[in-house]
Amino acid sequence: MYLVLVLKSYIRMKKKIFITNQYMELGGVERSLIGLLDAIDYNKYEVDVFLHRHTGDLMPFINPKANLLPEIKAYTTLTRPIKDIIKEGYWSIAFGRLKAKWRAKKYQGNKTNAAIFQYVADETTHLLPQITSKSYDLAISFQQPHNLVCEKINAKKKIAWIHTDYSTVKIDVKAELPIWDRFDAIASISDSSSEAFLSTFPKLADKIVVIENMLSPEFVRQQANLEVVNIEGEVKILTVGRFCYPKNIEGAVHICKALVKRGVPVKWYAIGYGDENPINKAIEACDMHNHFFILGKKANPYPYMKACDLYVQPSRYEGKAVTVREAQMLCKPVVITKFPTSSSQLKDGIDGIIVPMDIEQAADAIKDLLENQLKLESLIKNCQATNYGNLEDIEKLYNLI
Image (cartoon, helix red, strand yellow):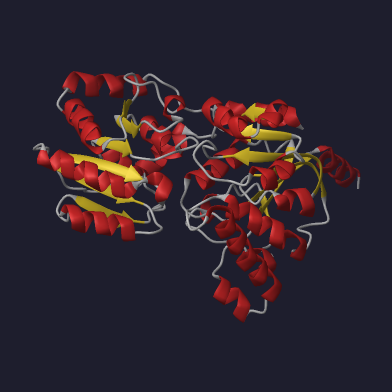
């Protein structure tokens, strides 16, 4: 009986943390969440994780010490096709999402913009049930929509996370500001991301705290050794990322063409998922069928990183690309394009190279690097000498409780 009382007292002493994310599909945000969950001291903290949908190849990597809350059907409707949720009877949520689309189109015409995420939250949050009746010491909204943690969770303190470059996305500042302002702190993944965010929301400067993506070199290297892959090519280049506008995988096809034109015997591989149409169109237009290959989804991309000669991130913009850091952990030469926050990603010329966005100039820079063996060896050596792990950053999170 005494031991039971002691155990109950011990459990009560643990601080309670709530974390929510959309799902666990392959992506930098999700890999960053896995790193965060692995960094937490479960002897001191009790963690509940709520996912809108229990889907994605990274589901098995959720730390078993964290408590995965049951899926709530209504929350799955936020990211599934509208026609499907209408068939299931979620008329109000479907109408809310359609209204959000109308508001986004009205806000900026037919151009792609990120304002729709806030509009969807505005139009649907009140239709969703409370996630749990528990009270927490800290609630973390790891990814939009941030309204859910504001409205559907009881916590002493609440944090929202920034994963993108706010200087490059079109949002409705008037609609988003009141939501961000309700949080006690806003976690940013880099100084550059903080600056970009504050250029849009200067009033929130006192809430910003930098907590970089928590990644484990040991985990990445262990996963890289689980499989031996044989990708062909005299010069093997790899890119990993969602197939979407920010990642600019179709731009990599054009760089690949420029490299082939310059006589570089390149085979370029792309791992990811999403909209393949722009990439396939670029492959067709550039006649790169024998040089650029879509490998699709890979729950474990690390053996491919280990097997490549060069890792290239051709993004239009990033918060901070997790895959770049993972490639560095595997001591690979890395090339990234000069997106607005690129300087926070690596030390140009030291543990990677930043090249112009321009296709021809990027190709020239990559060709020069590939032909400079001393430079390649220097990049590899500097990666080997750098500890890219930062699990100790979890202390910053603890300090917010």
